[in-house]
Length: 198
Image 1: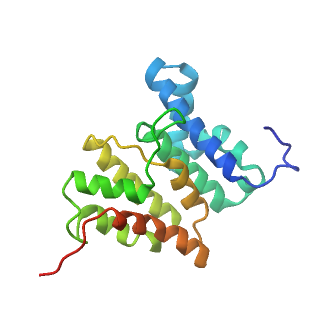
Image 2: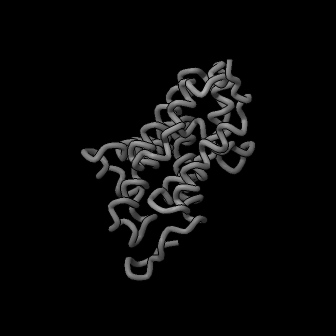
């Protein structure tokens, strides 16, 4: 649905779902058919990871934000998340696939696959332990590193990019935000083996 600038409401949860699914759909079209429009869009979206190149992603991201595109924090979150999803879209899912896993659960399965789950000092656990204390851009970079690690280890379980985008969308100050930020760590440890001490 298109709105004029004056009547456009804030980005709803439904629009977040549509936004994320569109990115994954375009990435699949790019992989499967080398569709020129999809190739162009995914390349532009991936440019949204850096302030020096993010302008290329504006036509594909800012229309979803409406008035919120004027808020730097929301704009940065949308651009960085869109770039991350476009880069790792093969780890995402569209509505035709099996249900994806919440990021923390997904990371727990990744840790188990690479035998990294026995200690709170494991590579993935140590990256997630302080995630909630990072500013949103640092946190997105941390998540990107874990996604990159999964891809390099041929880990193919699907991650719920919609839930992940919502987590970052509501990242901020206050108790409600902290609850959102800690959910990833809670989910991670809900799939891990109990920690034992010697």
